[in-house]
Image (cartoon, rainbow over all chains, first blue to last red; front, side, top):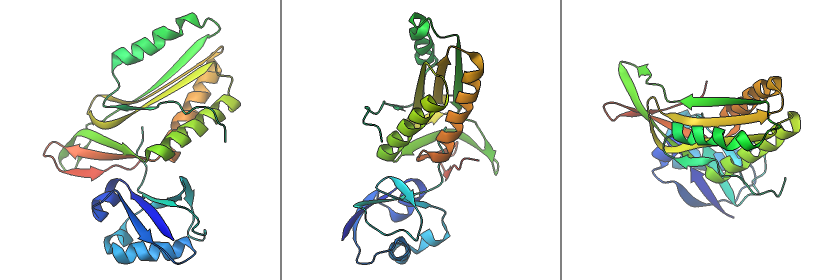
Amino acid sequence: MKITVKYFGMIAEITQCDEEIIDFSGSMMSEFLKIVHSKYPELKNKDFQIAQNQELVALKTSVTGQELALLPPFAGG
Amino acid sequence: MSDKKLKTVFKEGAISSEFIGEAIAKHQTKTSIGAHNIFLGQVRADVINGKTVSAIEYTAYEDMANQKFHEIREVAFEKFELTCMHIYHSLGVVKAGEICLFVFVSSPRRKVVFDALEFIVEEIKANVPVFGKEIFEDDTHQWKKNT
């Protein structure tokens, strides 16, 4: 499936884009993370959460979403 | 999920004291209110490794952030006896000393607004995907984390 992946803050600085489409044939979020890490090895040392369709998800979650986002630590307020 | 229209929270740049003053003035017609409470987040000129922060540039995952603000608002109205509540958060560059977050709650009674305001501000800091780039005076930067 084709997934729109959004990047923010320090993550976008590493990926050098705000958004891209990644073709994903696995099922779990942990597999998706491996693809991201192999594409951007620098992200292995960075702290971030993953949101699927705008909800934060764990690595044991199934990938069902059209949109994933990699979110660095929040700094609102 | 409620189908109520999402309120506009984000504002480009700093939140001015005029804007804050007008927001207070607008509530003078609502005479059931007995207490307001206001939180203002201000950009600090932190010194980190000898370099001073001159501004923070805010970005957000806006769709998710607006949804989260909406959820916080719904929960706050359920939990506390509020007459009204407003949240404004900056996007873009806000200089040290300027206001980047304005939360305004109103209720018939004072104790409610103390509790409600703390709840709302803490929820925003923990759950809303806003990101802050701390820009130093020499134009280098680092990414801020909420503590």
